[in-house]
Image (cartoon, rainbow, N blue to C red; front, side, top):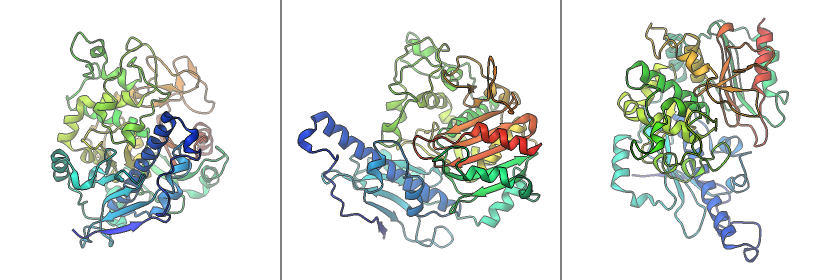
Length: 491
């Protein structure tokens, strides 16, 4: 197969320097940690370039490496931020296929060089399954039979690119997005403030969509973005995971009271952890960092089985809230085969999410705690379905009618040190003791993700607000204040 290679500027960068500190001044552990951080940064970069470019090209909304560097690869967490942008990379593409691929050919994989004595970090494109970052040390010429078989089952060749005009007609037919009647003038001033520093210095808004009565009242986008541009959802994926579980419950394939399947048998106390406990971040399991940083899984090439399943419990299940990526990862495991059989992208399309890629680890486990790429239009469609309690415009019920109440009720243990409550995979504006957010109704709830991904659903006002961003580390877009001001502007 002929390939096209695109090399980044700065390819001559010295690869043996892992820290600004002199090597002699570092302990063996510090040198090891610096090397590990560099490998993680390379995996982060490979995956973001692969997913950002390939997923957008699949839906006809192309992005460039320069855009990914400007947005996804700028302002990330330490220590990766100081390393990541200068790492040399190659985007490897296949030969162009008429009516099937971009003119340059579709992405096969992305390589990021990080050390002279190790293979580059690799993120491989797997068509509608998006991209998967491979383990550190992987050489593309030495893949296991299992990985090769997975590639055959999930072909790299994407489906034919659909022109934006055709996608628009699909969205209109689905009636999840009615953009015929817009009223930019009335809400323009309030909505456009999302692109300023009013709601957080250092915040960087990429997209805002506001709907009322399922009519879009405002759309705004940063340069290079559109309503159909996929972005990583980060923890908004947890709310999508909860929605998939609701669909499985509707299909009779799951019960939230059932065991999440943890532990080594009935005598293992972890067997008492239910799907409901996991959705409510109340498994009682230990996690080694606040927020449960899962870098080895997200960027290191480990698997869900290796990183998410085997943590011990330190509290009785259902008694303590501990926000953890691992809990969502185990909540989804009991329905993984059901998702496989139904096909995740088909499930997403049932929700009106046509630009969505549900990514997996390299062994095929869904990383539904974060690794989903979806457009602003997709997230608006998700919000609209919750407004209608799961009833699709065709009349089909996608998840139980009471599922909205289930996910948006702050039941069970709640997070400390915040006015936000937590339901089942969704954040709530009220807590069991009351609502501290002036101007926001008690029934409002939200999906929230890293770097400013937000989907706010306000059933009593029939309003959905989508705000996407790539906020700088240490900054936060105040989605509560923005929601309050938007609702006031709608009066």
